[in-house]
Length: 459
Ligand code: UGA
Image (tube, rainbow, N blue to C red; front, side, top):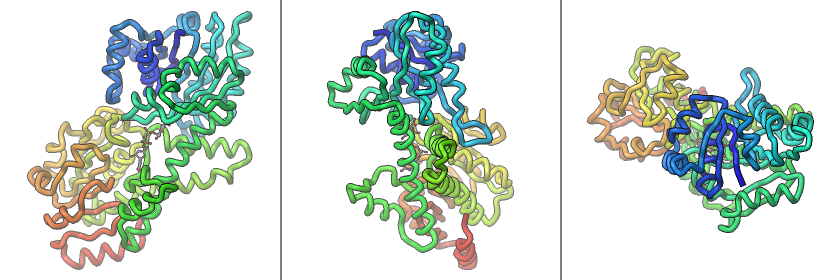
């Protein structure tokens, strides 16, 4: 069985390399010639642990090739996976479906042997059925082409493991034959005991967005309680630990902090609301609007906390550590850290930024920020240090190691990864999300009083 993968972003490049690892011959297609050249030379244009090795291995073995030609892909492949992006449309919460539509149309027009198109992109419910019509109307006469939907649940940073050994496989199929084709593709995982759920198109499409909506809700749920503990007192981490011990709740995705970002959770909850609205069910998914708001308020809270800890932001030196949306990624799409850095800049602060992998991507997005190549350089003149992504390098910080690099004695722990009592004992002022702000013992008492008063009107 020959496999093509249309779109070679995170999802597509990972899927293509993993399919080659499973023993299939794979052809990856991208409309970006530069990306195809880079991948064909075994160079991955983004950061994903374990993937460069896999790509190199299978480009060298000849099992994995790349092209820009739909004609080549349509004549060669038996199963065509579509993993192109569905970004948020500017000025709307809805998903931009133009890349998926164009990929499926191009495939339909170019497929010259009986094949199955398998959608992997995250799409609004109803898409597969609509694309099926596009395929019927545009395929070549005498060639059998149909569609199935197989959502992807990979996490950035764990993309290879999540693809080769997923929690579950979900396929939306219109016939037992298509189910059998996909069972062959995933035979190794199924043999290892990975559950496969075969269902209709709509369920398969919805499983994906429901999973991401649930995860976003879980994060915003704990962050809403952060808003309470910040004012009422209490420790959000202990609260999360305690409720998480209830197996029905579970501790994962209850890490309070600056909230969720990335190319998936934020846009998926917005697209789901938009789709529900189109179906006349705006109310059913309205709670997601609140989840989105809670999430964005966390970013405003860090800006507020920074201003409170410094007295004002204008021309104050702030070092931002961590601007990717999560560690082990160079992805800065809708990143809380980068958003906060930019807001501080807009409010007049002198912002220096350091991230172990995200500087280059962030520079393309916000070129006006001052990116530095090391933690040491970023904090050199800082008055306040912000830790906004939980990279290992930042988790390992101690009051002593940081004090040796910076005059700052103020820090905000945006991910709840530092042991506050240690910093407090060492004379630092430490602000965090989900815990009341207690200034360092050496802060004059009237400043502390001011902070207590203003905390009543926090964002
Ligand atoms: C997410 C889902 O976890 C994957 O299952 C899904 O396949 C993927 O989206 C997708 O739709 O393609 P990903 O965007 O890689 O994966 O990132 P997550 O690990 O889910 O983290 C999302 C955000 O939530 C990050 O900004 C992270 O820092 C934040 N987060 C996560 C928290 O703030 N608290 C937590 O407890 C967990």
